[in-house]
Image (cartoon, rainbow, N blue to C red; front, side, top):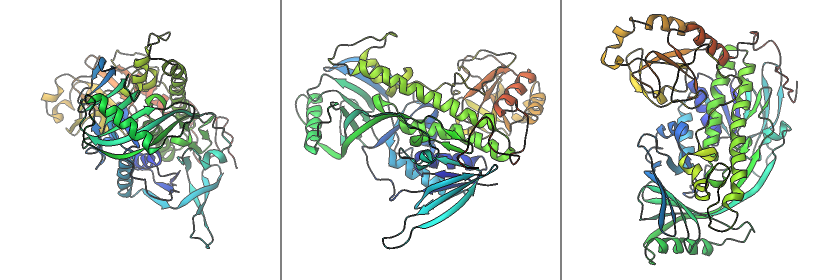
Length: 534
């Protein structure tokens, strides 16, 4: 099997390589970075909901601080509080911790090869493969080394200045510097241990505070849009003013660990696919204003694309399935960017008066939404208009709408293994049968009873690899409901367990087999894609 060539070894590229290895697909990661990720405590990311699985990587959990809740205050008065459930709390960590853990994880994968100091210079598509030309940095006075790699696909995860995107001739429209923040990471005792929050009406201005592990915190102050120079002394003044406001005018002991200025951009690539070449992460989109999470969106790109590339690499024709990557992910990111564009004039429009939008969201609520995972700014991604959305003959109710991320319920595998649904993602299509009381029986008994034999046989006949799991219950469903969960965790459908026709229809839709089956080597890209080279 030809490897997938990944340009860029940031969080998105490494996560994609790690996920592909889990599907048995080899990859080559071109690491063009001049140095390992810098240790910057003030450069952080928040993982929540569908991205929490990445906190299971060795070395991440102890550095990923869980938030106990969120607090919004104005002039010292609490206006809103939200408590997070222990099993779904956002986790906040320095970005270099995640990157280091991902590098260590892919280093243990035999199917992943990292090629250091190489960057893409060109590519050619030749029907059933892609040839990627690279160059390696050379010491001063020596000639740079050129290299050619052959792969099944090329994925540009090479950042905001993506060479792959430029070679694809894809525009990257948007706005630069839509928000600026002064940022500081410090170690101190603050009044709300474990709580993140938004605080307004302080002498130092508005500040967002988010806990890190080990008694550390990240503080963000929005800056004027006039581009005024921000010096270390300016940031120190804000730190002192904020700490004094929280401690009756006194500045408590603290340790300043890192500081800087964070610029937020709004950009979205016009296309994310050119035949066998794809974009993901910073190469495809930039966001971050009002607390939206760029790293998390890149991880979602990787999860969405990995299983679709795996189907193409293992089984051949998957054009409509590969098309769905751009249709699903670009649509969701575009909606997030539109929500920021609509909210910015309302929340930064002057004064501290709460303004109401047409949907009744007030100013402080909008400023909190992305952090607490609510609304268009931060709500869980739902694939509302996917080209591979299932339309079964019979649909059963569920608390999770089709296209949303499935709830992380306890499940039992056919061998009796008890685990969480989240831990089974990243593999085959999951068929989760709700069977109240199944947990009290030994698996060897209920595997031969009731619906199980027929359902197991139906699972083996599907056009996608599938794994049958049992859950004693699932929110909003009744007994003998069969939940189809995609490898990236999105719920495809909830159907009656005995409705094999709906099950097969959904699996065929997910596989993209509504089009005629052809071999992957039978020709070039389909569906109107125009490759750069042929």
